[in-house]
Image (cartoon, helix red, strand yellow):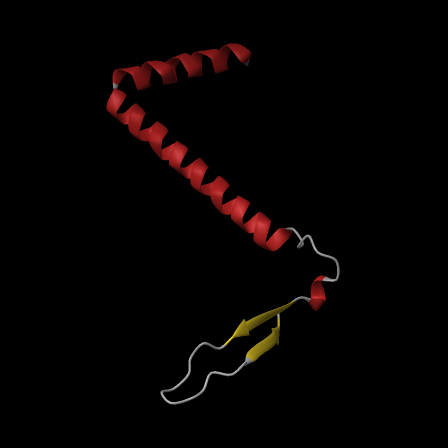
Length: 84
């Protein structure tokens, strides 16, 4: 079984050396696929799978000020608070 695997690996290497254009294309396609998969998993892992590093996460809120004022209005203080 180990001898068969050695022969298969040698045959694969010979085929890749026979056509270097195909070898480069195959290696680049595999590298791009692995890199994209790793990047997407890292993003999903950090956003969806891991909890936020804050106590009482269900009580987090955002506060934002409304910066749009029609012509002639005096700017006052307005804040919008919404629960996430």
